Length: 534
View 1 (tube, one colour):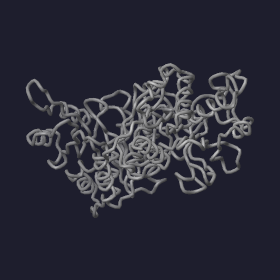
View 2: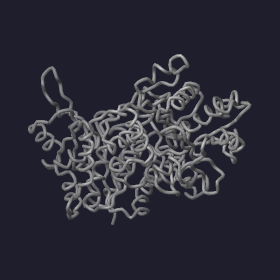
View 3: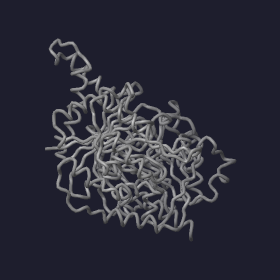
View 4: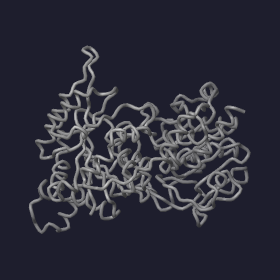
């Protein structure tokens, strides 16, 4: 029987519930327990696909094409399990499903109410991930903070699950803030007490409390929280700020986190093998050389918009013994006059995915600089399209070459709508989403990185390389190094004369892991390190 762990948060948002949940998943997996993870978000959008990165950060894409919350990226990187469309649920999706059922007559004329219809929909979704995955434990993070109006149906649903399955099969972990008042030099437990009291008033008794703090918590504070929040003393666990994100599981395990979880769920704890994780942390600690990678985008003021790219760059650094410093470059600041000054001192460049016309010309100028100066370059999705546009303009002489996304009447649409789409296509869930196969051409940089001819990567795009220009661009020297198995869709391009200049239509960052860097990020950092220290 699948057991369920629910992770809630209180006092303030941004406490790291996702990291706590992901760390626990890693620790349980190290004990031989099959784990799946899930995020419930209270906003009314059907999914994050149409939410601005300024508001929500990046959209993480699963193997089966679900557009999900960025916390799922943490889960995959920590737990090293591919998640799916059952791993993210929003209030919007809940109501969407319930209303569609009502319209189709599934409720046989009943009055539709929050209880039982909305809560039942949430419960069925939570149970589904357990049934589908046959996981021993499903870890479910509840977005927002306890007390939020939007979160109440989710809280009620997990209360009911606790009643249905019993305490041996359901465990609530509550993450709260312990603030430090510098004026008095004191840590305060009262916010945690109030947060737990709020949760208890909703019928849920957390049995483990994780205390988010920036410095070690005094023993007396832990005792007070244990007593007033009605939890066992060893179930009060502190979560300190760590210098490297991936140190979090080891820090939490020093407090016997996974052992205590197993005890509370009546699971006999097996040996915890974190040796692979410890070796990875050792590689991180041993990194001495620094490489500077310019990340060129339009959301650079909000780093979460490129979270998976950031992490994948660091992963590539770990395997190359290098500390990766990201130089955040607003593409709107890049002009022919400023480009040299901006990129002088950079050892590599990455242009990640994105949508919309703002900052496009700056990205094109950036790609030209990388090509002409043999600066290691990785273009992801839009970044590949940018490289194609630049090559068409500046090498092939196709004046005004562009994507129809940015210039509908361009004379040379080298990037265009996918064949089966039209300009009337609705936004949201209509793109080429999820994992697709790709055939890699031997003798290319792609093959050098992957070491095999058949790969699978995740996509999120509406536009692609226009095959009408394939011959003209390849005759001029552009190499198509990867295509769909039938050869119809251009998946990757390269510039052979450069040390590393690769563009890919897919998103490799989603499959990178801290203990197993993605081949393309490993290759980019290797080339950047060579340039920096040659």
